[in-house]
Image 1 (spheres, rainbow, N blue to C red):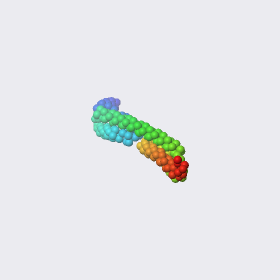
Image 2: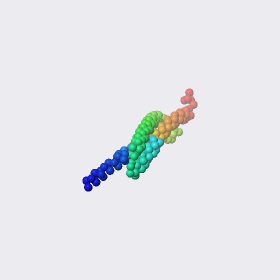
Image 3: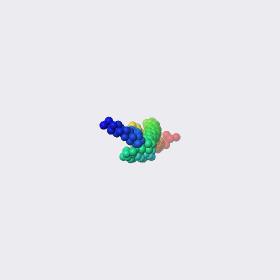
Image 4: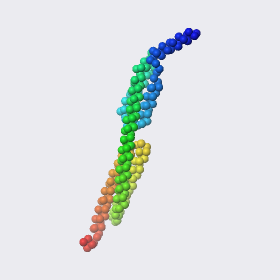
Length: 207
């Protein structure tokens, strides 16, 4: 009985050697975790080609692992490089995504800063605009447009908070444009006001 146990142990050791050592399951799990980390870093949006390559590499490694796992004599040495490559590509996808995401965030924050400054400047210009008969409606409309631009800046900041940087940049850019239009509208309103004043001033007071 003891001899049989020894023989079984020796056979098990021989099979293990013949199988190329321990199966690299932990390494495959690490590659899978790296792939999930890349997806969580929004690689699907910011590094789609790198993520696609990582997914392809992982599927290849996973398929090779399952193929060897089904054999009596396993060649794990042929699988390990595939797993390493899959993990490396996943890590690269994550790194690329994080860099691109950082640039998108910076662009959004820069656009918001420009828009906020434009709204502030337009508000100062608007506050100094003369309002009289014939221009009240224009000034009120410009004020409403400027309020909308300010709301768009706030919405852009909220978009940054939820990491929707594309929407934040687009919203801030639109707000800056609207603020610029308000500033231009103020100039027109002032010109219109001056024209009305000139028109309604008696001729003898114009001299």
